[in-house]
Length: 124
Image (cartoon, rainbow, N blue to C red; front, top):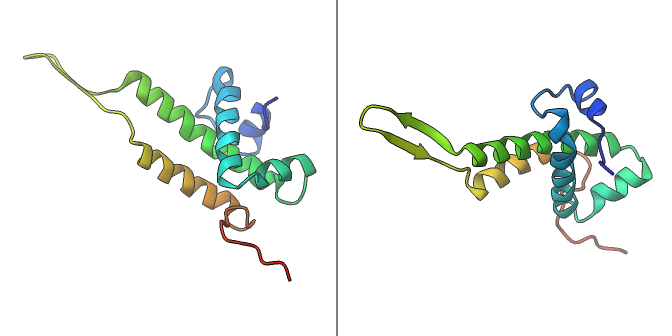
């Protein structure tokens, strides 16, 4: 089951980058990335429907768009094409550039929730 509906993506997030046919796959990959980056807190928030669950859904939408763009860039790969003395240049996004873009999107929507905190929680 997709953690975010396409209707939410279109009507609440106001997204228009990811086509409906590809949204579920991109949203699942985005949700898994958030699960890893939040040490599971994003999934707990969605299941509990707590105050941060909408922020998690918005973050999933943002990361879904990044996943979709990266997937399409890798598939085409062509960034430059010349016809005279034929030449073609391919490029793919680096993993570090993608991770940086994903981290920025996560920070925008989840920065205020504490879910991205990687430190140790001291119990007194």
